[in-house]
Length: 107
Image (cartoon, rainbow, N blue to C red):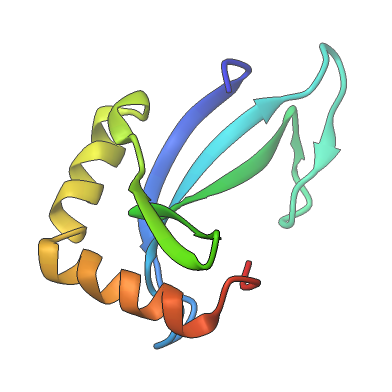
C-alpha cells in the first residue's frame, strides 16, 4: 500500500451483528494532471479507498475453525492504538464466537 496516503481510521459498526472491524481510510492519488469530481462536486486529484481490519484472520480448515491474530504492527500508530483499545480479550472472544456462528462462507 505504498502508493496510498493514510487519512484516518474508525471503529466501523454496520449493525449489531457486524461490529467487529476497524475501517482504515487512504487517499490514492491520480496520475499527474488527472482529476475527478467528488460527491460534493469539487475537483480532486485522488480517490478515497478503505480497508477493513478484523482482530483475527479466521477460516475453516480441515473441519475446524482457525483464528490467527492480525498483525497490526504494519499499520500506522493511530490504527494500532484504536485496535488495542477496541480489541479487548472479551471483544476478541466474542468476535470468534460471532465468526463461527455466521459460517465459513461469510465475507
